[in-house]
Length: 97
Picture 1: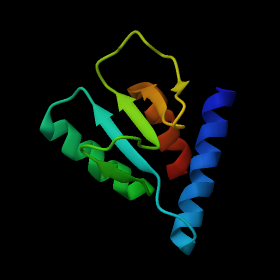
Picture 2: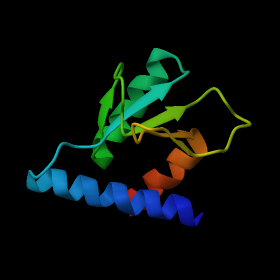
Picture 3: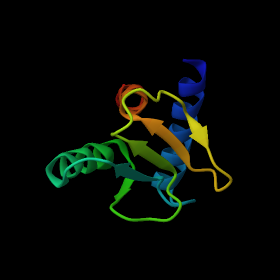
Picture 4: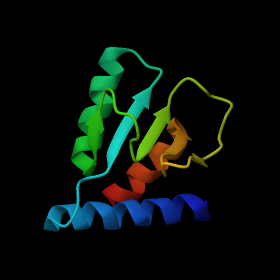
C-alpha cells in the first residue's frame, strides 16, 4: 500500500505542476479492453488530470486490464509504471479525494 501511496502522491505533484504550466500532464494508456470501456476509462482519467492516449510509446502509466492475477507494479527503464486495474482504482480514489 505504501508504494501505491507514494506513486499517487508523485502523480498528484506532476498534475499540480502541469496545471501551473511547468510540465506536461502525465499520460496514461489502457491495454486489453473493448473500445466502449476504454472510452469510459479515458473520461475518468481526464477528470483526474491525466492525458489519455490510445497509442503512445512511453506513457507515464500503463494499465493492463487483462492480467487479473498479476498485481505487480513494475517500472521499466523509460519510467513507465505498469499496473493492473485494481491498483489504478486505488490511485483514482486517492487523487479524487
